[in-house]
Length: 188
Image (cartoon, rainbow, N blue to C red; front, top):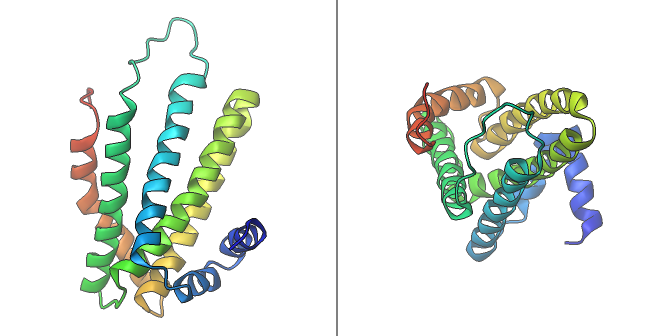
């Protein structure tokens, strides 16, 4: 697979996520490729987070907590990503889905790579044109939700996006306490 094919797949993901999911699932990536992709996504996510913590200007008079060690950030990112894969798989199966771990992992990793690109663009916008960054973040969240629903629907072969909505909502209900437990202690 080359850069042109990846670019075409990224565009297809934004235009027709269900078709992109079918193409990704048809690749039937091996275990080694999936774990390599997972590790690469975790590291790239950590690099972008490092950029947010160290490159964004801080307004005068605003105290910012010191950035956490990159190793802790990478561990947290990996755990949260693996938790989302597991939650999407288990909750989807409870709702009648038939996805395998490899299928959910394939789609989650691809979506993570697209989100890393979006985060990098957000970082550049935050440095260059901060007021546009908020609009871009909002658009990214909407598109990410739209793509995730279609990816879950294709992986679990639900036939309806409503079950995908159920998977997202139930996974979020389970995830909130775990995410709060993994975040640095701050006043709530």
